[in-house]
Length: 117
Image 1 (tube, rainbow, N blue to C red):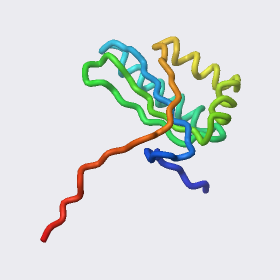
Image 2 (image 1 turned 30 degrees about the horizontal axis):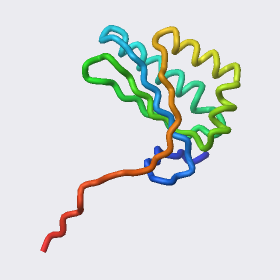
Image 3 (image 1 turned 60 degrees about the vertical axis):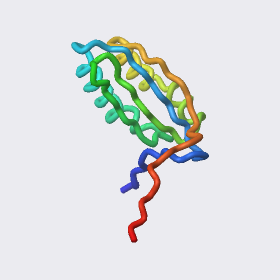
């Protein structure tokens, strides 16, 4: 069995991070999340170079954000050329159009560690 990779939010990691923002309505947000979950599990997660996808639902019901990672830009571009993936993306785009951008993680912040005497 192949080991699963987890989302890596580490500055300088050699991963492509995608942030996809979908505008929704409170009535369509749940449908979009269910569709994105199914398409990710059934199609995207099976593509070479896929690392992870994380869905975020805005509390006001107006957006869904998909924070996804791929091993490389080349892996992501190969997925986009795959007809099976194009059909998957088409099913999603019939519900909501994504605003897709590619990112590199450049900084993270955490609270300072408290030392106890």
